[in-house]
Amino acid sequence: MIRLTFSLKYFLLSILLFFIEVLIATIFRDVFFVRAYLGDVIVVILLYTLVKSFVIIKDNRKLILGIFIFSCTIEWAQYFHIADKLGFPPGSIMYIIIGNSFSWVDIACYAAGCLLLLTFTKSETTV
Image 1: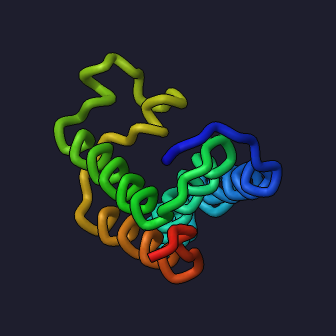
Image 2: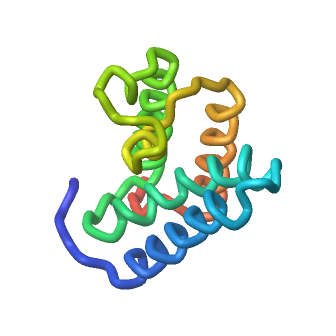
């Protein structure tokens, strides 16, 4: 069951993770490991906290799986240069958010982020 809510805790966490992502994209853009891998691990955690800010979802595993599928879908769209096809100019905020280069390594980073989420969250459903 999904219910709308507002969680200040998850919202503040989302803001913190967003600022970390901005720092990675700006200040740490030349630190290869951080830019190439850590940002992709953190982005799925950011998506998780953002959803949890506004929605109560009892089964965290389903949410995490949905985030992984969403992330892979966006990555797959990059294979087809969707940002170009949508007319976003290179360097624009939407071009940067969507991305324009497919990478299997990015999918592995999304999986790592989701595995971290699975490890550090527990399902609220009773079995």
